Length: 318
Image 1 (cartoon, one colour):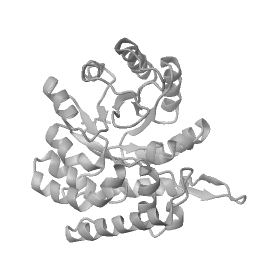
Image 2 (cartoon, helix red, strand yellow):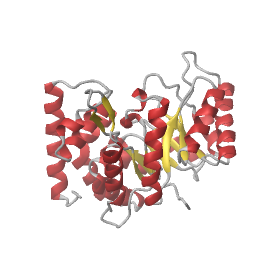
Image 3 (cartoon, one colour):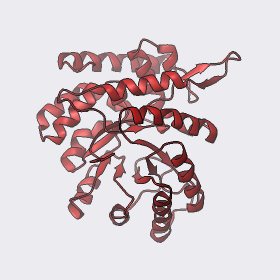
């Protein structure tokens, strides 16, 4: 695949069903069908999603064991290949050697690009330790035929933030295709672009898609775009064309839902919104995560309805 690494990429949900014993298990068929439905959607300008992110935060990742996760990604790789887009998934570990093994495993089930999160350690690594962690991941990626995307999430508890200097050093490694920057502080993106105008940066928070584009991001990884893909794709088309007023109209229409992408229960909230969108509320509530209260469910429904009404005015419901 000849990739430009720009555009929007959906972080798809892992759909679940109940077994005969009432235990939750992965519904591979529905997960594949919903991913395919998103990838076949076109924006008003005729473009489509430029990648597929599986088994991420929105995909129940923290609740899946290794076998479940690899089986899920193998099934999603079939969808990604059908639509000629890269399959992307994340990896994190306490040590660089554990990380290397994870990257090797992901490469065997069809993952093309690995989003590499900082080490899962309580102590903050030194810049030297952090660089060596990513350096080995890049070398491993080269050995097994995949690429990597350093993932900086300074807003989230539990993630060691990557310094600007470190990100700039990592970005020039041969197997690094892009940087994922998940923060509402888009000045980080602007600072990086001022240091290296050729960087490929993907935003990771739906609330700042337009602002990140102004700062220099060439695309984004979206949760809200799994629910309203036509709107998400079209907004990114406007961003890439510099049509900021038009892009901002869509951002404002999506605002009530995009807000949920920056909340601690983003997976549970947005998965429910996806269920409402597909008239499958019970399916949207099936999660290994936290159970929502009636008040939370009602709030998500109200936010979904308002966003849908606003997008219908803009002819952006696919």
